[in-house]
Length: 130
Image (cartoon, rainbow, N blue to C red):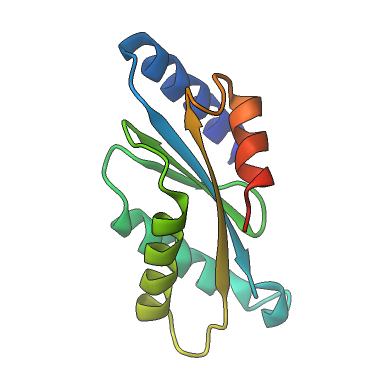
């Protein structure tokens, strides 16, 4: 849930500040889910969630941040938005059923370059959604 996700964000930003380490926050906007109707997206959303959790490092945090947005938090990672977006798009193409016509837009922000608090990092990432 988004409350737990925000609490984790605050903890990870505090840790990055304490250890003077970078941190990358990415928001993935998954488009095409609404075309499936009200009932069918459930299994696909779960599948996308599992695919991304298997893709990221154990230290990364993945969570749904709305009905069509995922948040990815990568401690000790530099911002590489375009490269990450291409890798995630390819991963979803390879792992999702061919009938799933979804696409991903990604916006990233980095601590401390783009901001030092949750609200600013989220705002920057949203503003960079391609």
